[in-house]
Image 1 (tube, helix red, strand yellow):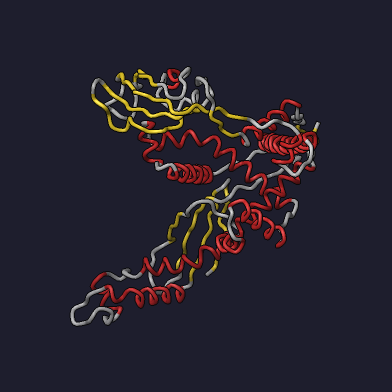
Image 2 (spheres, rainbow, N blue to C red; image 1 turned 60 degrees about the vertical axis):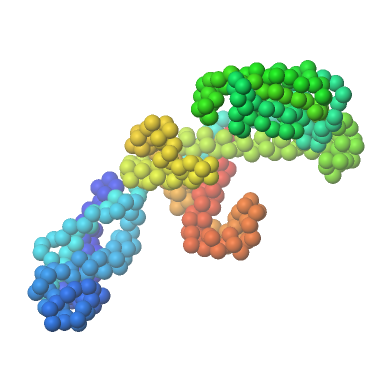
Length: 427
């Protein structure tokens, strides 16, 4: 087999692969050996008929397609490697002349390849500095969140007010008929949470333990139970308990209970430090995104449509997976929207184009700067993934074993982004 590049225009490469007559004959013989038991010839059991008799009955080229597939299976990747071509789509194949045994076979292959990226001025990209200082209010807000997480519910001897939790029995009626699913005993309900039918919770405000009340509401017209949608209902309610949220006092004892610190001031200082680190990380992400956007806008790349479509495919596959976790599918989602797939895909095209372009640029930086990934970096990445997903490290390694090159590429791309950021001009 010999591969020769014919030409490369924009992102379409064409090359010629020539198989010597002996190679094609050998492939045809292999195709016959693999498929002869599929053909019936009078006087022979399946698999025993000579090749010439099978060809006489079914046609001289009966084994050609399989033979060509066998040749292409090894020749195509070999040719790509020899010609240094990186395809991004399926190839188209044509034959030069007639396909027959005893003659050399010439195949013309055309395929869309990854575009070349010409990087310009990728060092020293100007970025506007983003800073988000931590205020005293931010610290107090975080502290109060911890206070609420450590609160407890206590029974109070007074009328219920918004924010309280009441323990109630209720039974729902439409007219004189009690409806299914509208009854509960000792059901906790936080007043003001909006978890019940609109207007229900407000009517329990002011009731004390032991009191009863008929709560009158109207079901929403779009209510999921059609027999109740838009109808007025009466819920006969009885309050058993009224509870309020008791917050712990914010003092040194609180700091000792919820942290490793001895004083409230030390806890506040720790909160400030954590929030400052979070803000710094978020600001760096924003600045890196702006940096890549700036570099992308300054870089011209003729991106093949196939790459954009592949990115849309990946995005929708991930979206479909998230929907399935919620008991839905992408098909069901489209039916709910009343939208066709082709139209839905259009909404993802711009972001897919930007992501492909950004990735191509980052990969070009990896190549230009000879960025490599060490075994230690791969090990650290897998440990981080194991911790993030609560999995054993060996299990993570087993899962990633089939996609180690993809993992290395991801790490290299992140290192390239960090390189660009380290060499950017932030003002």
